[in-house]
Length: 118
Image (cartoon, rainbow, N blue to C red):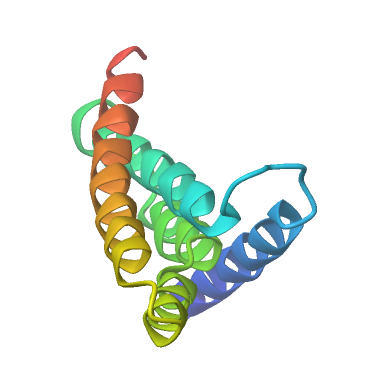
């Protein structure tokens, strides 16, 4: 039962972090930046817990499903893609979709690489 508490607490913190990023002076689309950063973080945690240190399962839930799940914004990404399509900006929608997916996957590998340094 406490697992739900850890996920919920992490999700709330992740959502607060995501909202805070919209106030940063990042000149480009903040959603893609958040998704890439979240992918790096979850990649790091995933590699670290599988290959280097065993963390308590509750902490892993708090960090991954909770914080990273609340921080990253796939639903917002999807909505923004649909909005581009509705504005007939098909090329931009395609580039945005492909870029988000590819760069987030690369972010996972960057997280793996950074975890290997520990």
